[in-house]
Length: 319
Image (tube, rainbow, N blue to C red; front, side):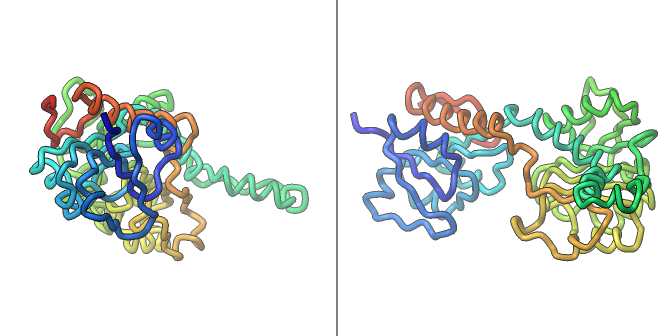
C-alpha cells in the first residue's frame, strides 16, 4: 500500500517532518509563497500539516483531503466551515502548552509591573555602579484585582497561578463557568470597570476583534495594566498606544500583535510597555509536545480513523 501524502504548508516544526517522513510521503510548499500543485499532486493529498493558514479555496482544490492537523491551539487560520462541508477532520494542539503559556503570562505580568528587564539592562550597562540604585518600580502586584478576559484551559491555569499572589480574581466569558469561585462579570465593560489588571486570553473571533479599545482601557483607570497573551486581533493597538502615552493606563505587557511579526514602531519608545515576540509557548519541551500531537493525530487518523484532539466544529466520525 502506498504511503498517504501529507501536504506541509509553509514553515512547520522540524519534529513534525522528522516523525512523518518514514510513514508518509511529504509534499512541501515554500513559506510565504502561493500553493501551486499539479492536478495529480492535488488529487494525491490526503492530509495537511500546518502552522498557519488553510483557506477554503485550497481545501476545495484537494478532492481526497481527509484531515488538517494544525500546530497550535488557535486554528482561526483554518477555514473550518469549508473543511466541515467536505467532511474533513481538523485537529489542533490544546492542553500540552497550557502550563507554558500560563507561566509566561505570570512572568510577563511581573515584568510589566516591576520592570525587571529594564533593571537588568541598567545593571549590564554599568549604570548601577556609576549612577546608583535603579529607580523604584511605580507598580506592584500587591493588592491588585486581576480580571481574566477568557477562562478556558489556559485562562484557568493562569488563574490558578495567580492565587498564591493573594490577588482578587474576576473573569468575563460569554457565559458563567460552573464550579468556579472567581467573580463573574457578564460584560467586558463591567470587568474592566471592576479590575485594575486585565489579562486577555481569548481566541480570534468576530466578537473579540479590537474588543479592548479606548473605552475598555479608560475603565481600567490610571493604575490599570493590560496583559495580552491571546491574539493581537483583540486589542486596538492605536488606542492602546494613546492610552499608554496619556497615562490613561499605567502599563501593558504584550506577547502578541495585530500584524505579526510587524510591531507598531510607536511601542518601542514607550517606557511603560513590555514586549515579547510571541514566545508564550516557545520552549523546546512544549513545542516538541505540540509537534508530537500534530503527528499523533495524523498517524491515528490513517491507522485507525481516530484523532486525539478534534476541534469542536469538526466531524469526528470514524472512517
